[in-house]
Length: 140
Image 1: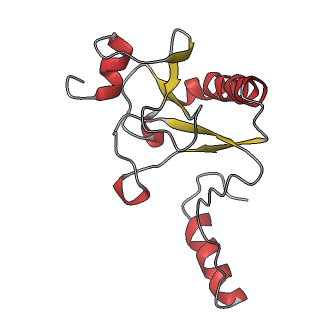
Image 2: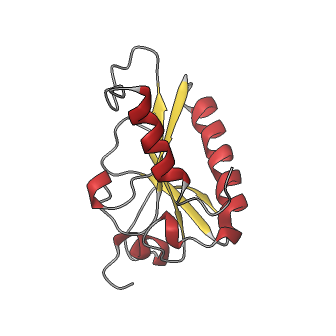
């Protein structure tokens, strides 16, 4: 896509600090990191969200996530890594080219991602689970 910043990174028309590349994937440092070493992993082909990524890329994406996570832990002496993906605008997706964030974490880094809540009752929790469960193709 001509107006996609991540496609421009893949094409090399915008510079980036690449940390990983394969035939199908590219990972680079985020220019506005949550923490130093915050890495973004993308498919080189343009897919707007997770729902659009072909299932055939799944194993390669998981393998790359594992390799990059290990490199962040070892290379930065990080104590942990948050792996996340924002899907759609309401969840904070700013670039509509599917991408995964790998964020280094350190003990006492004071980074808070979200507050946890609770369901008003077990019945309410069951109702939410059923709403999701009915939309899953392979029923449990």
